[in-house]
Amino acid sequence: MRRFLNQLFAPAVSMPMALMMLLLVNSGCATLQKSAQEITKGFKKGKSDLASTEDPLDPLGSRNANRLLLDDLAPSQIGTTLKTRFSTGENKTSAQAAYAQGEQFYQQATQTIEANPNGDQHEEYFVNAANKFKTAGVLWPDSSLAEDAFFYEGESYFFANRYVQANRAYEGLIAQYSGTRYLDRAEQRRYSIAIYWLDLKKNGAPMVSLNNAKRPKFSLASEARRILHRIRIDDPSGKLADDATFALGTAYMAINRHEDAAETFSYLRKDYPGSEHQFNSQMLELESRLKSYRGPDYDGLPLVEADKLRKQIVAQFPNEASQHTDILNKQSSLITNQLAQRDYQIGEFYEGKGENLAAKIYYEKVQSDHSNTIFENGLNEKISTVAAKPATPAPPAKWLTDLFPEGNPEKPIISTSGQTILR
Image 1 (cartoon, rainbow, N blue to C red):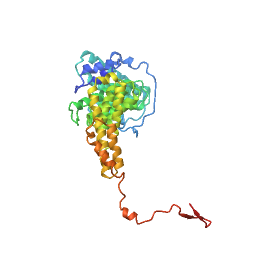
Image 2: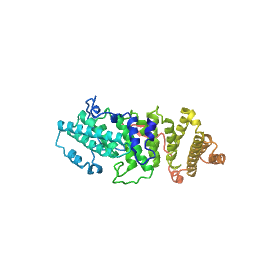
Image 3: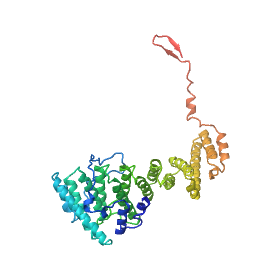
Image 4: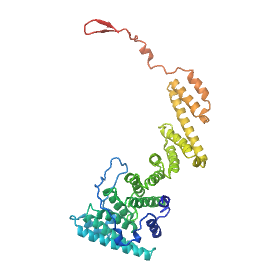
C-alpha cells in the first residue's frame, strides 16, 4: 500500500479519474460502493477540543483550518462561503437537511463516475456535495454530524479535483477531532496530495497559478512539505508517518537543504526502526550529512556523524550494504580525507601561532587516525620540525614583565587582631 501511495501520482502532472478511483478502492474507502444511507451507519458520537493553530514547537507551522481560499469565491461556491461565514448560530434541523442533501449529491456523483469513468461531469455533483456538507458542519458544530461533514466535505472536494480545499477540510477534521475514526483515510488523502504537488514542482510547474484548484496559488512545494511535516506531527504512530518523514527528507534534498534533510532522515532512523525506508533513509542521511559539511573552516560535526552512520549502515544492513560497496567506499574515503584535511589545517594554524606542541598533536592525529591520505606526505618532517621548537611561543613584551620581581609566596597577612600571620 505504501509503495502504491508513493508512486500514485509520479510523474503525472494531472490526476486521471482512473487513478483517482483506484486510490479510493485501495485505501479502504468503499464509499463509492455504498448507498447514501449506508454512509452514516454506525457512526459514534465524539467531540474534542479545537486544537490550537499556533504551535511554537512546530517549525513549519500549523494552518488555520478555517482560512478563506481564493477558490471559495468561485461562482459555484461563493454562496456557501457567505452563508457559512455569517452563520447566526446552531440549527440542528437545517444541518441534518443540508447533510442529507450532501449525501444525495455525493451519490449522484458516484453514479456518474460509474456511468462514465473518463468524464468530468461528476465534479459538479461533488462540489455541490461539498457545499452541503460544509453548511451542515457549520450549522451544528461540535457534533458527530459535524465530524462526518468535515470528512465528506474533504472527500467531495478531493474527487472534484479541488485539492487545496480538500486538504483544508481534512485539516479542520484533524484539528477539531484529533482522535477521529477517519484519521487514517484523511492522512492518506493528504499524503497523496502532497506527493502530487511535489511531482508537479519537479515537472516544472510554475511558482504561481491563480486558476488551478488542484494546487496552491503560491508556494507549491513548500506547502507540500508542510503537509508531510504535519502528517507526522498530527499522527506520529500512524501508518503513513514514516512515509511522510521519508518523503519530507527527499523533498528537502531536492532544494539542497541538506541539514534539514539529514535531521529529517535521522528522525525516521530513530523513531521508526521498523520502517521499510530504514536502509534508503540512512543512505540518504549519510549523503545529506556529507553535503552539509561546509569545509575545514567550519564545524566538523557533520563528518563525525557521517562516519558513525556509515559504520552503522554496514553493521545493520550487511546484505544491502554489500550491494552498495562502491558508494560506501567512496564516502568512507571522502570522510577520511576531509577529516585529515581538517586536522592538518588546524595543525598548520597552531604552528603559525607558535603553539608547536598543539601543532604536533594534530599532525600526529592525522598520522594515526587518517592514514593513506595525501596529507601524509612530508608529515614526519613537519612533526620533527615542530617538536624541535619551543612548545609555546614566548610571551609578548617579556622584557617588560622581567622588570618586575616575582611575588613572595610567604607574603604576610594582617589579621583582624593586628598580629602578622605568615601564609
